[in-house]
Image (cartoon, rainbow, N blue to C red; front, side):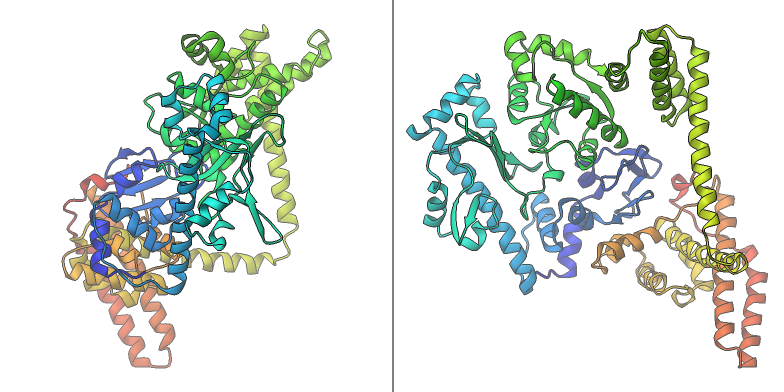
Length: 609
């Protein structure tokens, strides 16, 4: 589908990028921009920047960048037309009817039909549960003490004892087999399709926008497998969704509870703990942890209290921490899971257990301790070494000291002794890294002189491109800078095709009295191209005052112009007259530029500190 530039611009202008992204990422204002943890890679410190003045985002860590449309495309895995339609709907806009390309029409139609099929299946299962045929499913949910309100809230359903009922229902609605085969709802055997879910209670899976994207089903009786889940489809990605997150993301609690199954989530929500979520038939993954980080800074792991649950917790803790989340572990003994605990002890006692959830490091050390004979001095020392190795892995010295103090007090050992072990562990790790670095350098086959020359050349080229990025960034942040800059630097003076193109479009905008990088970005269709373009509008240098900015601008203009003059000299070295013209141009630059001042109005708050 193709929309006019005017339509796209209206959609973009009616969807403020800070408002849109803040519904996915926790943002905090810092100066002129907002910062948060990047939703596209794991990080512990916020390097994801959103600029309200430029209406663009950029991650200084992974390089992801774009405008509000490209953010929705990247986050939601939408095509460009789908992202425009989503944002138009969000803004209450009606889009004009447009023609699709064949490829766009096909993908859009398939995804639309697949979402429609999921919704139809959810409705079918919902009403089956409440029909006479759904009595076994209703009995199961009643036995699990679920209320009518809870069953309705989660859209719970039932698939009957026959394996073709949903298929026949879909065919009665004229849904083609080509779509049903991609839906994940059917099993295909020699061109014959049967229902994937039958003789099961059904748990619809919804994305964060409350759209049904898949299902989980628990068998009635002793059939195998006990739980069955939808496979991944064009509209269902297990790693980008979690059960209950569509509700939990709006919780007022400061943490999310991560548990194992659908019934644990439902039981906790019914008891008032609406911040519970679960992974979708898989172990917790790093992508799940990044997803959680978009909505909270802390998780409480609530896995079963048996051996498998403990192992799951130990696997999850490093991933949770790697995503920049604080982790605690919920103890449910003597009960197996949250559902069982709440039924036996009630919500008030469950709340107390949550308040007393154990620090994840202490939990790991308690489980590690079980592997050693603490009455044996040698075994006990080995245990302390393992603990020291673990503490050595913390980045911040103050964090290491805190854990050293706490652990030494708990195990009645000297703080100085444990600190010495941690120091040795850190040094051992540093030595290993240095040894690996030396080995890599020894294995290098490039002659040092050649490598050094190339390195200097590459460094110079990178410096010029960075300088060009500074000019482009300053033009978007201090539009008044353009009046002076254009006397010295024109788009053709930029050194790469991309920076020349960006400068050309930005100069055109500034001639009309505006700088709109978000509009420029839409000229690039590939995500990587957009990210590269955004990088040139987010080039930073630490400056503390207007005078420092002025001086940096003069130096940067000189560097870009000198590079341009040298390039022209190289191109015209056989033409003596042109060479002399370049020399004159450089001399004039050296004489006039030091006295130039620049209009920085409206840019004071952007000074870097």
